[in-house]
Length: 404
Image 1: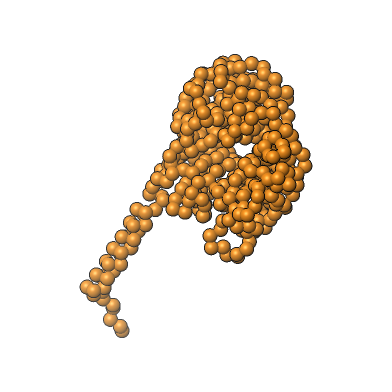
Image 2: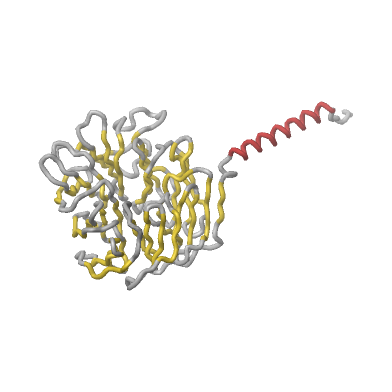
């Protein structure tokens, strides 16, 4: 019969050393981990659903406000109003502004948007604006997450189907589970070189619908901006599928400073600045990027612009005026001058910020019904507006103000 094995003193010392090494490694990983630097306080249940307003209120007064420099327009998701500042994203009660939930990281926010009744927050690390977290709008509960290479500055926006992250050299499009559907532009260490149709281009603007992704870019050696129309969900997200791409030179001997105003179905609307032979205009392009029609503009257009989709219309703020486009065909309907931002739809009317308050406009004709007085400090930034039930939210620079 074999004698039982006995542990020697050396065995015990080795085992203790291994346990200590594991503990030290775990401690180092924890100290350096994102989880240690993240605060997540969720709500037990989402707030009550917001009830659509049946009329525009006769008067408005500020009820609460909050810093929100990481947003460009007030965000509403899951019944909550969401503000974002520094590395912090907060869900608030729409009426009182009371905090319902909070998600905070030690990283700085690059941008935040709302889509699918969720919040998509993009944070900056050593790889650029690469860390993305999806939060439930009503409770703040963490959902999907993703990390990928990105530019150090990006614009994050939603189109009703996808969320895009646009930098000056790289674009990504994500679906509702944050799976990437398109990778376009600069690709570090590409698995299959040559998958991207062009290299070294500066990405200027982008927008998308469920069936088209439109990108404006400026490529080396080309005399004007280029409009590229793609599939927003190709078979392989690393291989863009183009429907058409052309330099905007034939239109007016070279277009510089164009901007995408909207994409609806297969139609793309583009602001075309003054050229050698024509003034500013809106150009409509088909699903392959071919020009279809143009509409001359009679209002000045500045570098500060903002566009929002409001149900049956797209509203474009030119820096001085609001131009209303049909949401289905993107053709211009009417123009309202002396505006401070693109406005929002409430109870069948368009509410547009003006110097004296909020102008209430007939949505079909643009005729002014009345003005609701609202006091504001004089501003140079656009005022973007979102309606949350019977509450009107204004983004004024780096703050969100609730009016009711």
